[in-house]
Image (cartoon, rainbow, N blue to C red; front, side):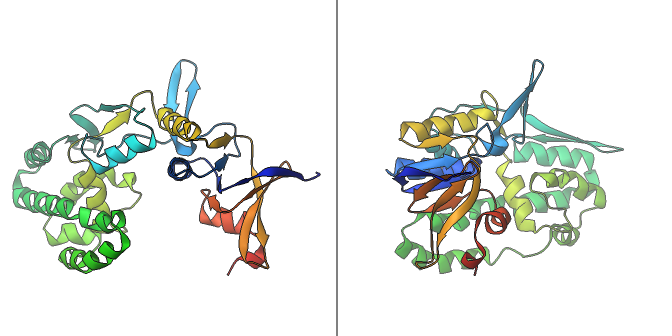
Length: 302
């Protein structure tokens, strides 16, 4: 197919329209950059998409989110990225329920209620349950030390990082399995607490206790769901990007990233239609394997 050269020069091309690409696009557009988002399929949003079957609507991936209480850092980040268009609904007090062959576990929106519920199920393991929640709540207070340097000016971050590392060093580095064995949990109690392991994709034998605490700790005070379903996340981001002058294109699959070997830099993309679009920078949101193996020429890969 004959190449069609696009006359405009963009500050950035963003490949793909998943949540990472749309977040990047929103920030760049809000900072005055001329950007274009290129999506291969006919719908924007990646895993935030929804679909309909008869009179039922289904989310592709979003189940619920944590830390959406006003005042939480994540809440303010989402509010900024969506121009305060997105509304959130608090899930019921018991937002998860797990069924085992011989017992059932509720997950309530309170560490005290959750601890008491587990103690009612495992009355002989109250000390292990207390130790678990003490450690979890302690870690939750320290987790901000992980994110904080990323939000600070570089020179300040360099000064405080050694102190933050010292505080975090007191937290044991071990697998989730090893941790529960160390505090004396039975297999049943461990299974009950680790029931949401699929949330972050790490079996207790394979995951770090850090992963477990970060994920489960974020849901200690409940879960939230976007009003209008998961697709409203993408729609709010899309509106924000377009209001800032960004261009969103569907049915625009990228065939290759154009590479200037003499200057060792990417200069644009060629679409599957043959159209060429130029930009000062390229951001790929389709994963490292697809980007390097399918879009970049061999000479560009170190």
